[in-house]
Length: 464
Image (spheres, one colour):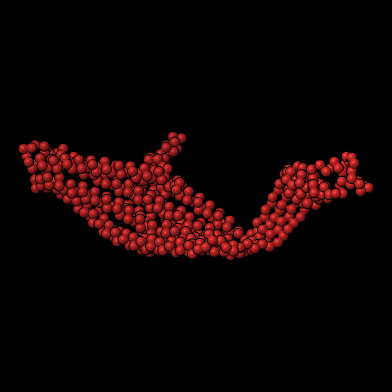
């Protein structure tokens, strides 16, 4: 029982002690990236828009159902016709009731008294004053476009290009965040390794001062060494404070990207070269960045706009059919109509020149992208030259630092034998400190270059 309890307690500490490798960190960043999620949703929305536009050749089926009450003469008359129940009285107007015959009786003599005929002369007529009536009308229609001047086809292609452009933007965010995460992840280790080297130098300096008394101003040589070591100690503190701030900045950035706590950001150590070979391998073949790919797709959208503008000058042809049903107080009836329609702008001053304008805008977009692609390729060439120089400098600095470590060991022996002074010892430590700083800065600069190169070269599936 106690043994199993001990194992359960030990396992979390063991896993925590292993540290977080970069692949695990990248998975967290992928799941947490709000910018990438937003672009992904826009891409998916673009795919839906593309699928909708692809269905432009299908017929449109529509319906219109309405029930209304009206005293409008025209609507009432059409409602009665729609019921196929119009009568003669519906055509009654004031002009028909003032005909001479209305003033004569059956003997063809003028009326001498009031009767139904003469009283009707002052009543409102049925056609102009039909009263308020209730009608119901239903419509079912089909509209099938046969030719739309190529506008629907062009719009479908535009939606497809736009969706592809959004996908490239999403991929660019992925590549950029992958490069940023890799830079911050490994830079933290380089900074911590620099802190360890600072601590080693500080221990040597502190041990040296504890064993030898150099504060006596009467001994100018010894006192000069004391001042040099004091200055070295202060410089170590400055470097420590600066590095701590930089580490905090990088960890805070990774914390925002991954939504992990500072406790979780306990990285697994890995040497710089194996890290770069695994996640950012060098590839000599240039590949356009996803930004350029996205802009190319948007330029293709601009090119298709000229086809849309041209369609405004071409006819639109289609067939249609509608069925109607009317219901009122008199009857229920139906009707239909079916036919072909042709629509075309014969003259539209506002549209003149729109096709040429769209073509020029598209050509300008392509020219700008060509220029950006050339600049990208040139930038990659510069980065590769920079990478080779930084690689050589890094190897030299690593070798120099090993020499300095050996020099520190030798200078301590020389000082103990009296062959070297305290100021010489301090100079060696100071030189070691500076080489250690250059080594850290060189590692971070080289890491920056390698991660940036990955944005413009062919990639494997390491960041998929």
